[in-house]
Image 1 (spheres, rainbow, N blue to C red):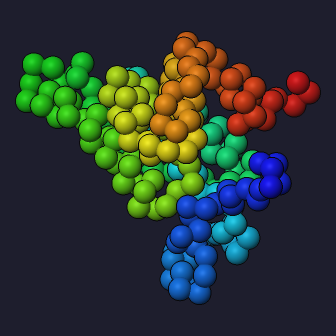
Image 2 (cartoon, rainbow, N blue to C red; image 1 turned 180 degrees about the horizontal axis):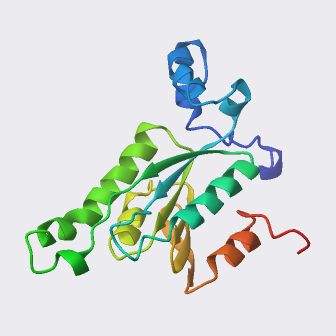
Length: 189
């Protein structure tokens, strides 16, 4: 049998663990309560770890990028599952007891992402961050295998099998998302 004739793994192979079969009816009821329909359970569940907040300037503009990512996931046939990640600014907390929290926040962010992705059996995750805490914390929190895409305010990386394989710095995020097919190009383009 050649590689091209092998059946590919279902795109929702992880989330099927909590959405498929009679014994998972209680699990599906939770999704139904959020507006899911029966056909949604064959689609991949893609987490969006959103670093948007209004407590630091470097993260206060990320919601537009998260909205574009959510639209792209859904247009591509996936189910977006959005969750927040904490952030703290050492620029604001320096010289105070707050700095003790800033130093460990990367680990906390990493743990939050890993907890949501693994606990909810997500098929993939996009991490959106804009500072020196949630960007590395996001990379640390990604599952060690599979293909993930990380977005930030100024840097985008593509990972495969837990390794960074491509990196774009200081890019026009929307333009790159359009080139990657995550976000549709503007009408008439």
